Length: 337
Image (cartoon, rainbow, N blue to C red; front, side):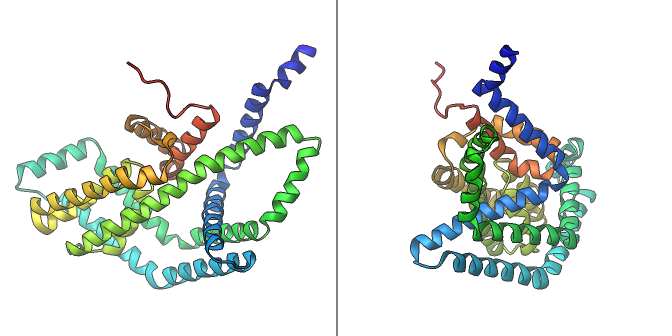
């Protein structure tokens, strides 16, 4: 009995058991994972925005929170009422354009070979599923709107009562479940420092990439700009792989518009934007411990997509970075000779 008690009192074992309980709880709540993730992302990003505003202007905190949320809700309302039907229409046209390109016969040997290769590797099937998913996601607005609205309300109340919430939660530190609280506090701080900051960086990078790419596509007179910009932004949230995936529909449309010269231009644009991301944005926004080898990045994305679907592509890397931080994997290990 004493052996079992001393075994359970071991800090490492205790931490592992509590971490297992947290994972099990999240698994049991998997039907609510969308709501949980969206609420966390809203809360984290809005909290950072509130801190940024308050650091520059001496304003009342609660008034700032309410004003920012009113602005976000206003923008979302305008987007849904005015631009959602246009976005759905453009994504439908975009899908039809890409689909017609791959179904029609081509005289060019190189294009025929590429199309056959894509079909052999079932890449066109994945693209079709992706476009269908986007179309369904934007069409099924009632379900998405409810989740986003609930997330906004939860994150709003979280930020309005953040000081009171922290004060109330600290009471558990000296309760009978203090051990459990200490471990939750440990994992929570690690989660915010890694997962939260990586997600924030991914959103900033995706926004910059989307803005620059959309500007380039507008100059090159691409059709369905709004649908393409949404697609580019969502793919921009996927590290490394998002850039490669976005090249397929962009190159297809570019070839339809102006042949190989237009494809060359779009590849050049994407390479320049990717270079800006890799050499300017990533070093400034990402910490050194998130500098994963490309091989690891793709392995994590493949497994996370398999187990968690579309969300896995977005949160797979942040979760992996969080796990590395919990396991205390050093960012700068000794170099192999």
